[in-house]
Length: 159
Length: 159
Length: 159
Image 1: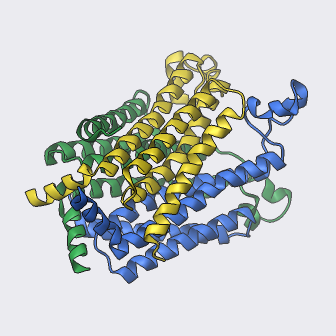
Image 2: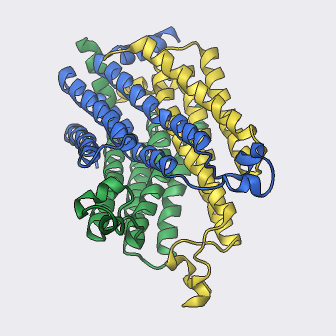
């Protein structure tokens, strides 16, 4: 058993894989932060979607008026969904890329730019920054993922 | 080639990794169940969103009235989206955590609590249970993921 | 260090894993394409959701009229969300399945059918094809994922 553990430890000790693990964790934590921001806006804007969430405001009409959409809440939710749409491909393609034997410096460049772009995207969405701020930060993360996908398919294509 | 297979088999034979595989599969199957529940409510409540889905109810106005939202359908869909938002981080961070060499008992504790919390969350959403039932089950799964992320970054940080 | 790299290379050289890497990358790229199709319809239909996205159309009422939903945009977005709901389970369960030591021919069958079904699903959603075209293509991908989950749990169950 300790031999197996050692083998797993060797994978996680690989520098490219450690870099993947670090940046993936950071970018997933950033995505998870969107849940907290949504909750914060729902509570401060008093804008809920489930009747059971407004029970503490009383019963009947007095509580029902808080079952409404709020522009700030919807904005955070759109940012969260955009994270899902873009971070899921990074999670999968990034893992395969990390296992495809890239140069450490090249891999770091990909992971760092993607992570920076997604953090910028969230800021651009929430502040909000004028366009093309959000569009560009989205496109940079998208291009990084395409570049990693190209490396994966070039290295290991097996149809 | 059989040597490679043996090496892969060693990874999957590792007990922590097998536990990760088991609980991840369970929690992903649970998430997939939401699709069936959505379909069940769409059909029994006759509440569809795509015009082509109501073609069997006839043409024109007789079919159009089934293009509507239904509170039960929307509730399941919110539960499904919440699953995506929380299970995707578990999928990624959990894998990296399983490869970071945790104690088997500690890892099992994390995986079991997360899985239980997400099953409870779904029940709380669908029944629905009064708050803070849903909120607490969400928070427990969230905290478990943060704890695993902390272990991953502590073990393998490479910026 | 080069020893570790060699070990990682052996994983990616495994034919089942290479097949998983190839089809996962293809299906994630297909999902990413939905973002571009959404953007295409938003721009051609002039249907936006963020006020800052309509700034180039001028200020005030002249720009506000483009903050609206469009049936084609909403259709692509539903297809995109359905991809997330189904490709995330494939990503996780497929990885565990690839590491569970399946026959290469069986694994290829699973990966190819899933990928084909999801491409058909997108076509059925966007054209749109009459039902049960979309429903069947969804069900085929779903069944493939269940089949892989069964193999994972049968091989490595550790509760």
